[in-house]
Amino acid sequence: MKYQLYSDVILLCNIPEEGLDAGDIGTVVEQYHVEGLETGYSAEFFDLLGNIVAVATLPGSYLRFN
Picture 1: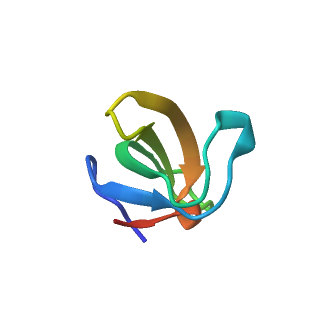
Picture 2: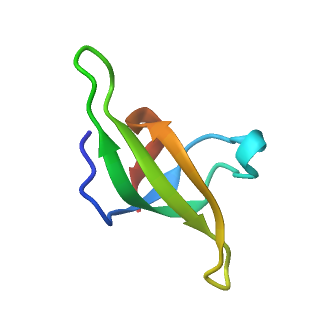
């Protein structure tokens, strides 16, 4: 699935090293295309106050549309 820049996404799995939990909401800020591999994305994840919690680079299969 291809996510456009600035799409809102939901994380589907825990990423403990980034302090992220499944269900966290983020915004796609970059796309990475490598031939033969799944498209990757960098996404910013925020807390309820709008503060950035983490910026993580993830495969598209870890995300779904919000």
